[in-house]
Image 1 (tube, rainbow, N blue to C red):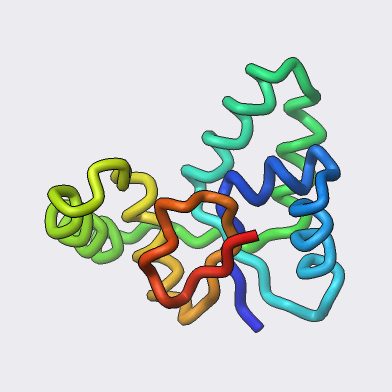
Image 2 (tube, helix red, strand yellow):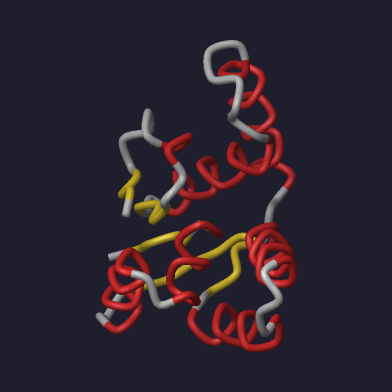
Length: 126
């Protein structure tokens, strides 16, 4: 199975929470794990603000993930999705639109704790 793990799920994993245990299980199974580079920035920012080890967080993500490059086509599709949904779902960020568009391109499930992704069918909320 293919999964794209969102920054909120990575934070749960790194903190060792109950939700993070679900991520840990997915990582240990024979799955293809993906991220987009903006997720690295989001996780590192959150880890730094919490006073935790940014190098450990970075290495954990890199070691366990395939990085999907954000192609111009993905960026265009994400921009269109963001514009379409922004009036309905005010909290949907452009980063969220990039993540959901990337998940669709991969034909993968998104693992997240972020309720902003709830309306999308290919999402597993932990």
